[in-house]
Length: 456
Image 1 (cartoon, rainbow, N blue to C red):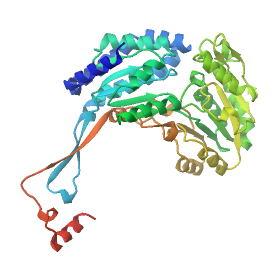
Image 2 (cartoon, rainbow, N blue to C red; image 1 turned 120 degrees about the vertical axis):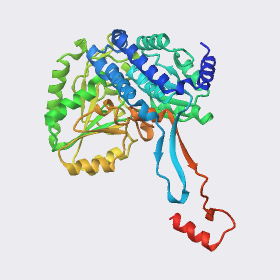
Image 3 (cartoon, rainbow, N blue to C red; image 1 turned 45 degrees about the vertical axis):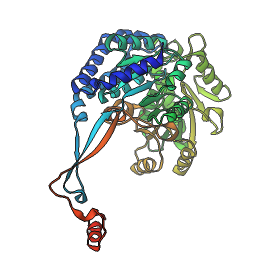
């Protein structure tokens, strides 16, 4: 596959301005939505092959989210595209100020394997809505889903408009060697760093959706039984292979034992006593990641789980106790069904612990104390999160999703997806019927007086 030829063809197609037309964008979004519906069973089968995802989990975390985003974009596209009037300061009298949203051009969208359908198609919705052409690069680690995406796109869109590049590391490198107008990357921090380095050569703007160690804080006022149910849901969904999953627990020492009891009960309720035999429990993506996770837990104190099946690539939901902050499992994002439990006695300890590490993609807080809630949300920096729940912040098109610091930059979903793939052009139209003289040379005391009056 000649990647340069694909990019050049898209650049020429973008120059025709056809992608900027409202009707064209709307039709493309509707076509994509129809294609998702028509290929829903193929998507289900592919995700079952790649990750052993159940149909329920696939719809909840992949297909359903994509359809919701498409519905939202179709409904609001005209308003998003509309030129926005803004107020003009008196010093610029008489003129009109407005902002025009225009597409960047040719966008590259690179996605990971953990939510291989949603994390590629969701940003594509923003690229289409904003009027761009797009080259899509799905993960080589989820080949069945990548193939379905390739088939859906090739059957519904011309390659000079939207194209899918299959392959692995070499294709990733070849793509990043091209000059794009925008790069949207979702994946690991290490590869994101490489993508940003490549983008810097051409000063290409980027969005980086990365990850990190997202804490879950449970204070002594929390509803422990409900907290445990929601933590188990958010942690072990997709076998923990979620960028904004709970990575570790920080629980008040006085309620730790009770919370752990409820966690164990909820793991059994949601996944059964033998999750490895549960046909709907997601598997680890490949042997490399399976071995990495098993190595992280080999020297830890396991109070639940720890069992695995190397043939099925499944690791049972696992809880670790008495975890040291300096242990290997606390030095990297786990990205698996393993939950370390750490304790605290004061909020100062919590804040110092989180602040001393890189900013996480998400933070979850379980409390009924409004003062605790206010303090944590004010003092800790993170991409986004929930109070008294986990992971659901990703499911709304009315708020952006994105990281901060090492967990990423930029955000998308809903209107922010449109904004991400748009350049917002600020314009002033000055009228000719009056031209105040105070801004022109030569300088006089009177002009200085007027200047100070307007600009202060």
